[in-house]
Each structure stands twice: as C-alpha cells, then as structure tokens.
Amino acid sequence: MIKKMATAAVYVEDQQKAKAFWTEKVGFEVVAERQMMPGASWLEVAPKGAESALVLYPKSMMKNWAELKPSIVFACDDVEKTYETMKANGVAFEGELQKMQWGTFATFLDEDGNSFLIKC
Image (cartoon, rainbow, N blue to C red; front, side):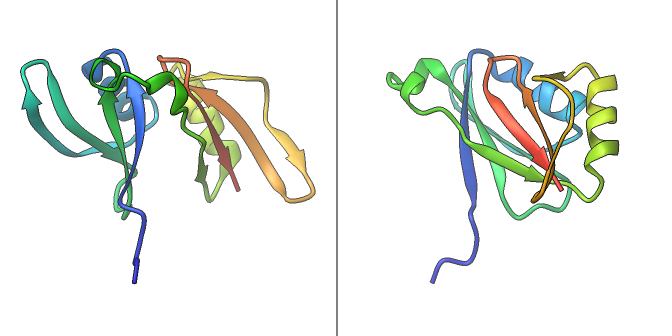
C-alpha cells in the first residue's frame, strides 16, 4: 500500500536560485541535494518535518517541462501569518488573501512563474 506522497516536481531554470527562493523566502529546508550530472542536482526542499518534498528539477533535463505545470496546495495553521511572513520575505502573491466558505487562501509565484496556493 502507498503510505505517503514522496515528492512533487517543480521545473526551474536555475536550481540554486530556486533553492534560495524556497529556503530563504518561503522557509523550507533542503532535504536532499545530490549531483546527477555537471550543473544539475537532485534537489529536494520541504517544510521542516514534512514527509513529502518538492524536487526542484532543471528544465534543461526535461524536454516537455512546459506541459508539466505543478498544481500544489500548502496547508497552514495560520494562513494570515504565513502570507504576511512570505510577503515580507519578497514572495510575489497574485492578489490578497481571499476568504471563501471552505477557508482562506492566497496564490503565490516562485521565481520561474509557477503558481502555488497556501490555505487554512
């Protein structure tokens, strides 16, 4: 039986720039970083203590990367505080927090233009 989701891939131009975004602005930590070939690593980042991670995968190694857009939602205990912290760290959001019947959410962009959602 499947126990958990291990990783989800996000395709990036520059792995080191993406690593800085996810660790310095979003607050994730590096879970794994192993060289695959010159100029490319297997690079995983995740929230502290998480059981699954994002793989920051080089676009140059995946010919069809444009067809493989991520659709990832991150759950937060306090979405307002998370939103304010990430915004203060320079993360670009597509608008303000939105409140719906099912909860509060906001959409943010990484530096490669991939969009992600935070919610509570």
